[in-house]
Image 1 (cartoon, protein in one colour):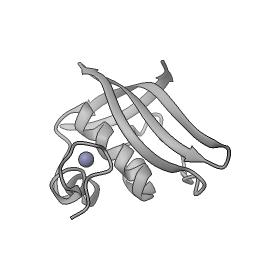
Image 2: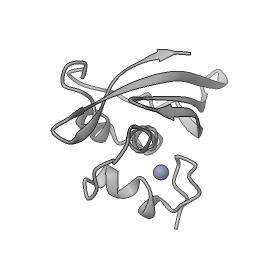
Image 3: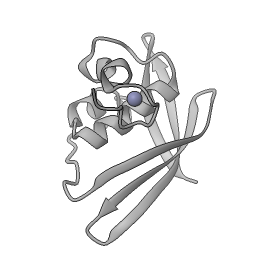
Image 4: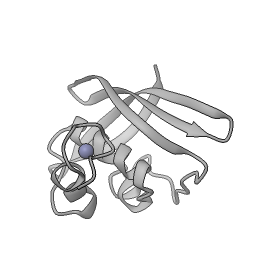
Length: 118
Ligand SMILES: [Zn+2]
């Protein structure tokens, strides 16, 4: 069984898989953030749109096929924010995105609101 791309050390089926498939709802901003990273890694744009707050959600989302997501490191998680470093490989080499993501709860579910580079 493949390891979950989010780096939890668990298998995909025991970690972000059920959140992506809708079997399970993310119980915290960190869990949702991990599932969204995994969605980027496996190319699941639907999950990204589904978990995006309606107030900030783009009309459509095209994932960059030239980016390969390599790893996720959660730097800090608390309250309604998660700070992380996501590493990728693109056409010009390796890079990373460091961001503080903000989440909000709506009808008992967590949604991604927006993020700022940190
Ligand atoms: Zn995971």
